Length: 460
Ligand code: 4AD
Ligand code: MG
Image 1: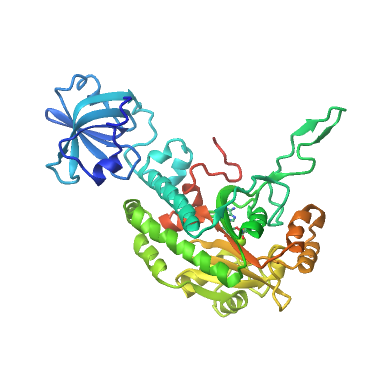
Image 2 (image 1 turned 90 degrees about the vertical axis):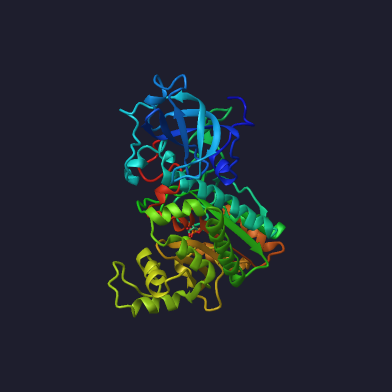
């Protein structure tokens, strides 16, 4: 087993099959089927969607005692010769010289049976669900796109900044921070103090700290976990998720939208070219026509309208929305989805939202009532990106903070950036799980993060 050189991953074997080579493959049994004189064992190792077929003949020493007892979920190490497969369904197969059973999985109790399980059922076994085809494919796509986020920004000279997870600033001002300073520290002279000397929480966005670095290094990005204690039990909200947040100095809203559109298209193209096998699974079982839809998104320009135009279109739509529409409301998911799915049928960028419904840091426009904000909405999901040009003028920022009821005391450092060499700048946040939902067609966000956290749910 120590021979890592000989042991191969199924993805590599299938990508460049070496007929006649002796190989060792470790994996988990999917099915076993007995024929006269031998058994077929389908095994997967998670490296790709495809399994490899093992031919285990009855001449193997442990054939009767062990091989004939193999069932789904057992882990095995197979040494054999790769040969062309005479049967349809696979190009190659592994003729076993030895099948070592590493771990049994009692078929009476192993929860993953051959039938298709519902995603709801699988959520209760988050420790086993990555062994299913769908969840394994999601994990691979997620990994590839996370890497793609870094290549996109690094290729363009952006510098990655590790923004803090524990923070004392509520970036979005929505009061959705999980508190972390509950555990207090004993003072030598007696009495307890807050660990950080003041209330701190888990970050709701790395933006404010990314801004700090953009004001020194120009173009930066942060990509990390985000925590929001919002009590939203929807198919698009998590209490813990990942956000990609670039921040660009000497950049306005137009530049911000351009980078966001380019980034989304880059990531979709990457998925189409590098994750084609996994996407074909989603295309067959999750959303018919998925790959064609993604290819179309890459080809077309995103639509662009202002918030005011969006409100007019919603008012003229004749639709019966649950939340009534009027200028000044926050667009709800039903409104967003109507616009992107029914009216535009492609990604849509909505700009220039009312200042009153957006956070203090967004740049106030000359009309005095809107801000230089943009949200990108996509069919099937709604908002996938939220961004803006930032308020770079000290006085205007201070006034906006005061209006929002934010104590400028705690944000002296943020205001300082506007006192010393301020520059126009802009950025956005991409909800990474919503991107993975868009790419995989998964209806529920709980399926695109390995260990979802939602109100009342954090089993491990
Ligand atoms: O629109 P949001 O709240 O924007 C910000 O936090 C900005 N500070 C980002 C920035 O400009 N640097 O969040 C950005 C995106 C949303 O568009 C959505 O895709 C995702 O993050 N998001 C969530 N994803 C999963 N679960 C939640 N509870 C989410 N809340 C926001
Ligand atoms: Mg938003």
